[in-house]
Image 1 (cartoon, rainbow, N blue to C red):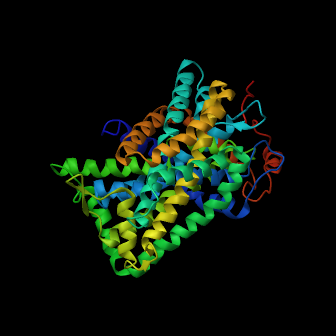
Image 2: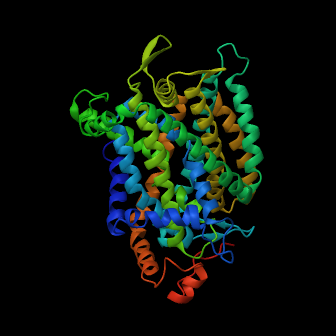
Length: 482
């Protein structure tokens, strides 16, 4: 799945292709997208949709800014060395165009379910945009794989990392066990996801800014205290991206491939560009303009990878802890995942003691807990929307119950097993979506050109006004489902 001839080149090449086709839209329009998402908070209240632009972005960020930004970066650098961070940047930069395309298609082909709520994503745009058997096969395959993946990337891995971080922060003789952490997660997640998308949107929009700002502040504190090491860190990142100096491999070619694989696979785990989930969250937004929501959605990849992942990676590299080993069951192994990130924060902040642990450890524990919780609630929504593809409204409640129970199981299960399961499930999700994006790319290009060819596209206050001045487009939303 993650060998040199399948997902790695497919992810990168599709991102490069879409970047070229759309004339680098992620570079040309990033500023406007950030302004639209974070400051203007644009929405047309009369438009179809369930939540605002900002809430849709928050749900997407909630689902993607998870332990991949902490444990995933630690795992990538443990396996591939500092050079893996460079390849995570690559997936983020080209992935912004991929994420933009997913959101445009998600809004354009979204459906209305029996409850009057919007539902969209690859499970719909693949079949509605690609006519014939191929589109249906891709859509159904994506929906099945997404439901399976929701129990891995969006659930068990998150819970497992929370349990590990909590145990590392508490004294060794504590009564608190991973099982208690699992029960706590089970209760909190259940309270949120049983409330539906509107409640989820409110929780995400309140939680996401806090958790990201908190983590950024902690990361910057480490970098300020170790400012002299930042230049050397960047030198190591760029040098080892193409030499594989710190990677495990029998010869240079194998080492470089190890670095690339670690960076690309963990980059996808972190920002989800290419998985198709961006289109699911975007479809719920109140908007008539697919392109406008696409610009908002692509900022999620920028925030996730180019900011949060970068800070985590720099903290690990400047602290010099990568390559640290520990003994597991009598065998010496490389320290990775969230444990490596935790050690980096503890080292970078000088290991200042607090009650029950260190300041660095506390920052990582709180960050993992909030990141993971937000991802759990975001991915529960993704799984539900993919189940709706089969007209399975009656499956939603059982799915929520199973999802909540898996969160408990994730807290008490081996992380190595959970990471392996997630890598496979992510790859299975990405394959049909990436194939469909290539086929539907001319449609994305036309939608984009039509939007930016309109006069005053930047200044008009509402989608409806834009349609009136620029000529009414085809309605976003696609055919209504029964």
